Length: 160
Image 1 (cartoon, one colour):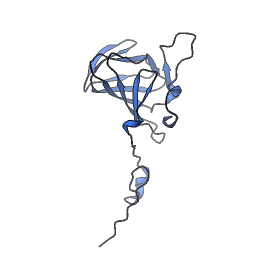
Image 2 (cartoon, one colour):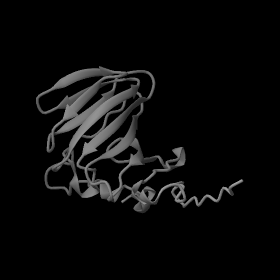
Image 3 (cartoon, helix red, strand yellow):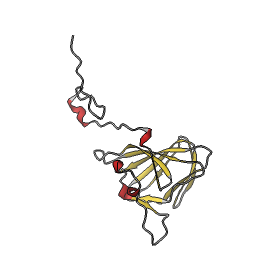
Image 4 (cartoon, helix red, strand yellow):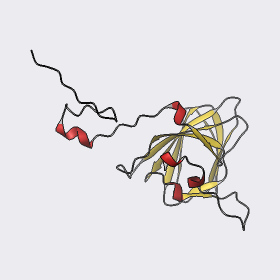
């Protein structure tokens, strides 16, 4: 009978399975990690790791009757995949109503916002390529002459 000696690291990876497993990364996200920022929605970072510079995934939640600020992401394309609720997505040249299962593609540098038009929370995945970086966030609702709000001003320091 062989002994089962497993080595589980802090990310939940069983390092005893395969020497190549060190290339695998696992994200452990808790509902307690959700935070609100001035853009106007709650964010839960599901995947945003410097070891994977090509992609990030966050769950966004907008309360009924609320909308996000008009913003853009410098050099980063984004997709919103609606998981719950309904909303109206607006960009510089598009306005479209979205519901569960629909995805909208937002090119890099494109002004955008989304409004919750329903009675319940609007929940969607924000999928960014390349990965989201706080310094690429631009608040376009700030009055001219005022400093723009960068997400790095509102993201908890452990999420930067």
